[in-house]
Amino acid sequence: MTISDLQLIGKKIAVGIVVATVPLVILLGGLWLIQKILTKQPSATNTTVNLK
Image 1 (spheres, rainbow, N blue to C red):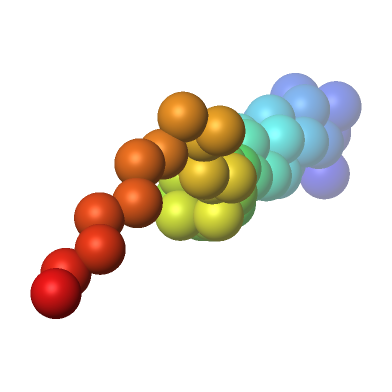
Image 2: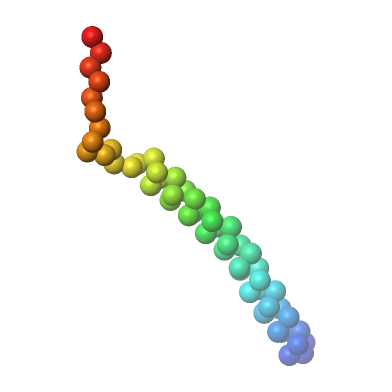
């Protein structure tokens, strides 16, 4: 194998790592954001409604 072959393999490996990492980061970021939204602390100005 020549140097250009090794460079091509290295570039393909680098692109493969990026292609695999970007969706993973997006997925984990979305899950983190959903968790933050759903576990939001209630604000102190909530009013209580008493039903009779």
